[in-house]
Length: 107
Length: 120
Image 1 (cartoon, chains in turn green, brown):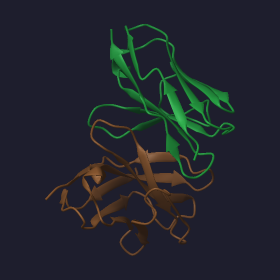
Image 2 (cartoon, helix red, strand yellow):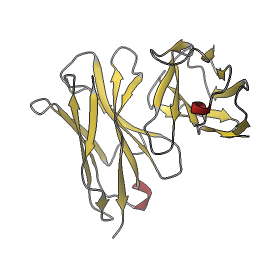
Image 3 (cartoon, helix red, strand yellow):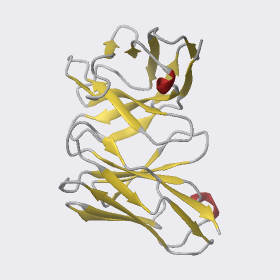
């Protein structure tokens, strides 16, 4: 199985901050990585696919980069609606696997 | 607009079989373009992929759950289902039904989720 490791697990930030979350794969997954945002009591929402493609309707302050084993999700200017938990997920091969999540909290 | 709606018992006894159904509206489960699957999330924890199936019968399961899981499609009702046998308290979770693109297996749509508690 491909292990996905996210860091940090928790992040405290203020509105307007630039925020970066890292995701590492235990072996190369090329660009087959997605990022999801989850708010309490809600289903995850797709933000980024193929490592850097922005899902339709997602604000442009979200961006993704990376390939192989190292990936990042960046929020260029954190907004109040962005406080949530973020998950990376590889779909290069089965079994599909998720990172442990990064909770973005208000500082 | 696509909607996925999970349904089934919210409480299951240990050693019994958990059964959930996902009703698809706004799209056809017989589309060659998509797989249909299940993901779960124990309370306060992360996401775990369970498995997916295509209406043609092609199916993938998590190795850790494979011996207990069956995912199937009912094209006449535009539904797909999850059966998880011999459940324990560790199977308590919110269960989400999802859609995956057949081209690359990206999970692109999620149901709202349903909490299933395993308890006597």
